[in-house]
Image 1 (tube, helix red, strand yellow):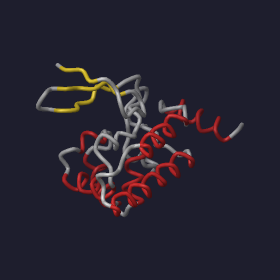
Image 2 (cartoon, rainbow, N blue to C red):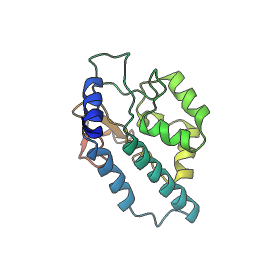
Image 3 (cartoon, rainbow, N blue to C red):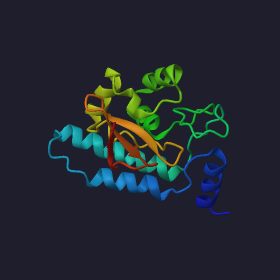
Length: 170
């Protein structure tokens, strides 16, 4: 069996994404995004992070959620130590302690739920990434209703590995 088929089979059994092209699409969309407003250092770190994201995707080792069998719930770091994409980027950038703290507090957290964590927001800024762009983890379902702007009660349907979707207001 080809490596791609092995990865897809493993992901299918784990309830995760089976299309390795989806993460590639996210990476390509992030690379196409204008970065004129970023400093030279942020652009360099962003490029490094996107290279790490490619490395993560090509490695094909994604976390498995053993605590929510049958459910399609994300896991920040699985029981085997395999990180989700966001956790992987944090680890590669030297934020292992933050990864441990996040996983210890809520290992089923979505990246958007970390919006109020100052250390996470600081890391995003240092890396030249936005919270919206940090939504690179799959949602393990057909869609996720994610909050976009609390004040306006604007929500967005986000499909797995999708950066841009249509807003819905409540």
